[in-house]
Structures are given as structure tokens and as C-alpha cells.
Length: 82
Image 1 (cartoon, rainbow, N blue to C red):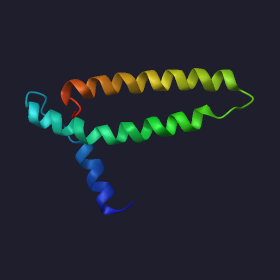
Image 2: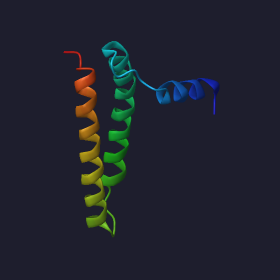
Image 3: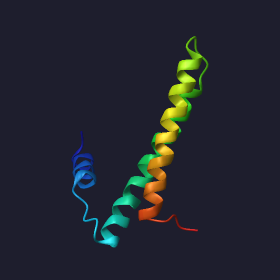
Image 4: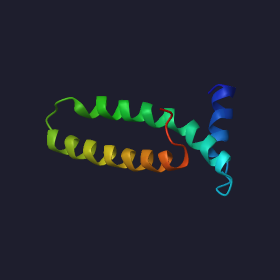
């Protein structure tokens, strides 16, 4: 793993001062691209037909629900730009 990835991971795992709105908004802003990439991967990986289609559809529905919850929490901390 490259040093920049290690630094990025350490920065994202660092504690966030929740009483400081600017720090919380900066953290949420850093997470937003990760959520977007994760959503795209989930939709792509779980949309393909398979023998276990029902299980995959249930998994997709559950993962996307969890991502929507995370996005809603991020929007509270850092509203998206218009």
C-alpha cells in the first residue's frame, strides 16, 4: 500500500471532534466520495443475474438501504453543494 493511502486511511480513521461543526463537515466531505464509489460497486456487483438471484437481490436491497442511511447522516453534517 502506498504511503498516501496509509495517510488517507489514518486521516479518515482519526477521531472527529463532534462539537466542532467545521471538523465534522470536513470529515463528512471526505467520506462522501467513498460512499459514492461504494454505491456504484454494490449496484454493479449485485445487479448481475445469477442462480441465487433472490439472495443477491435481498443483499443488494439491504446494502443500498445501509448506504442511504449513511448518506443521510453525512448530509446532516455536510449538506451537498447545489
